[in-house]
Image (cartoon, rainbow, N blue to C red; front, top):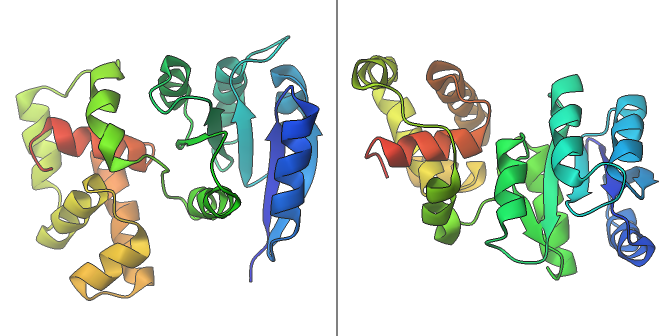
Length: 216
């Protein structure tokens, strides 16, 4: 099993300790550092290049939104998962705009925490389908012009369009593979091509694009 490295950024020591205890017991997961503010989080992310950063939003020195923006800019291979108290928190949406790959409630179960880290590390997004409409309402990026939208859509093959619709429905790669009778490696290839053709940075942006253009 490939090892997934994780950086914890939260100004509450007890929260960090709890997450470290849960994740540290999981095979294939390794905590590479802990930070109590966003600035230290950015420094440790630059130093360790973790696969996943668990990021609180309300912190001193530099908040989680600014830290997320800097971490994504300095190393796009690092995926940021925003930690929030409320699932419709404006700060969480700001985190997505800054480049985070999803968000997770702080009171999530241990199993959900582990699953979210593994999901994000695999290049997928952690965004519940039930909050997609609110996500659309909060996202600042406007839809592409009709000619541009048509051009991007025409660039997709029939199979890639099916994969895009599945992504917009909140399906993970294994679920898409089962639904379309494909191998997971084939699905991963299709997802990569869809993101490239839509010029979408990640699955979150692909979900937004699909909903805004009537594919979901």
